[in-house]
Image 1 (cartoon, rainbow, N blue to C red):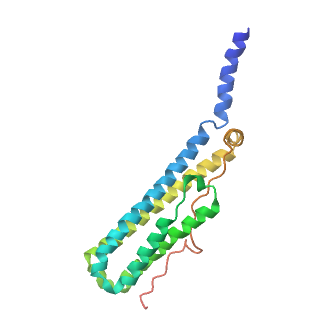
Image 2: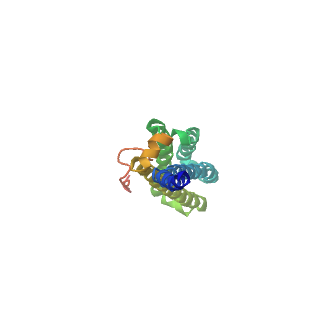
Image 3: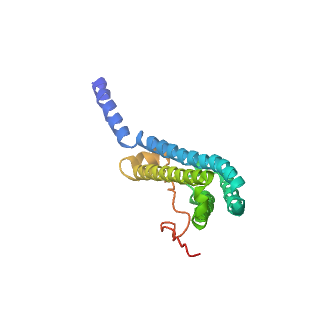
Length: 197
């Protein structure tokens, strides 16, 4: 009789544990951390690639030196900003990291504005390559950020909904992760291009 009760208890315990997020919570958390690693990898790609291209263009675009120095300076400051996976639950640290990365984006926007102000630079192969690589790099970063935010949303939803909520609180002590957000007010608006200036 005791053996029959144990045989019935094992499936009950297994079903109970599977329903409380024992596997889904760490899976969702690791997925979000992996997506964050992709964001960091794309920022590192930008940090490595842009200076090389800027160096090439620098030799051919002496009159735009201040813009290129601004990009290099912003990139250096962005490289100094670090955000570890365990910091993803601290909104202040995420905001500080985002601000450093936003400064690079602003500096890169001045490169784009420069090409619009000096159309003859577009014929320069090195400058065109720089512009293309910047665009491609920023697109990769945006995709990685979107993927990270999707993973954070899935994780945060998992730890806040029943029955995984039970495991999140009792077993893991899970905290919500912070999604990546726009770094400045009005960032969702496209910049205005004015050729009259």
